[in-house]
Picture 1 (tube, rainbow, N blue to C red):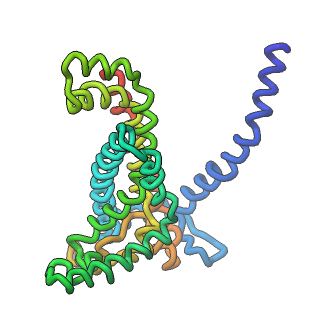
Picture 2 (picture 1 turned 60 degrees about the vertical axis):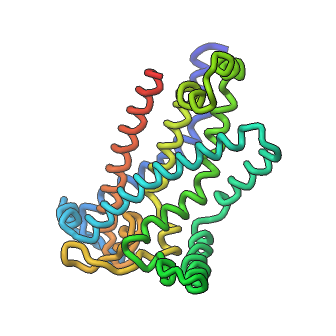
Picture 3 (picture 1 turned 30 degrees about the horizontal axis):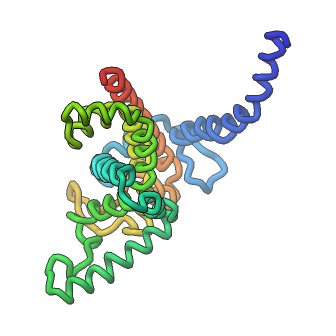
Length: 297
């Protein structure tokens, strides 16, 4: 077969995927950018071009600023908790312990629970089971729901996210650990390297590419968190920021949703464009930094 014919076949083979990508991703994104610069409210048939007016508004809106800051905090907490817990679980299930395959399945199962169901389950646990334990044992700290306090709600959300997501990231780490040659670890052990030294000087450097993937997935999923935020806290409890009443656990995605349901569609779309731009820049920087570290290692 000639090279030209192969090229035509390759192009035709890729066309369905390219067409779907353009229709589902590219065109809606372009329309979204356009609508973010109009006064569209989701109801009127006619729209008026207003330029960057919505972008100026949202960067001075206390609720959006707070949602952005609390989303960054939530993401940082998850980057640490999820990856540390996942790495420890991966070490546990790749050891010579009995029933390690059973443990792998058990740690992964929470990831299969949908975010909506997960939120309602843990809402019941925090609002009822934990409070009952606090009342029974006289633990004042647990006698009111941890979800009802502005100082603890974001930590509880991160705890639930870690419980759900760490099993999935664990599998990525398990695959990376199993790809490390046993002869390398055995040679280090013979040379006198204890288990801790083998972890920090062999295992972690050899699985640098897995950390690149896991950090990227954790970063993007945390920034886009919505379903669990909606069912677990509905954005509450109420608090104040810059002398303005706001929702203490309202992440960016939920802030965009609330803006859209208030028939401020163009403003919500402007917030979505900002979320996309921030997430794209941060993700690109994270992947670039981790790739350089992979080369250094």
